[in-house]
Length: 79
Image: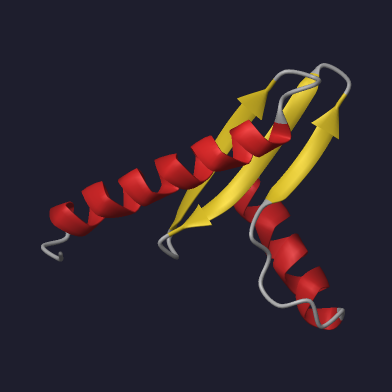
């Protein structure tokens, strides 16, 4: 479902000439879902509380995405 949501966001951003989406955030009644693409083939999906500190949340997601890319690069024989 995460890939479908990000695919829809990608098409929407393309049609509106906004470039590639950096992340997709869905605000639910009991919390949020944030979806980011990591390294092209992977998705990082995070769940948060209803009222997170968005700056801190996005900073931590960027850090986690870099770490995932690093680990996956080593597994694939790169970097």
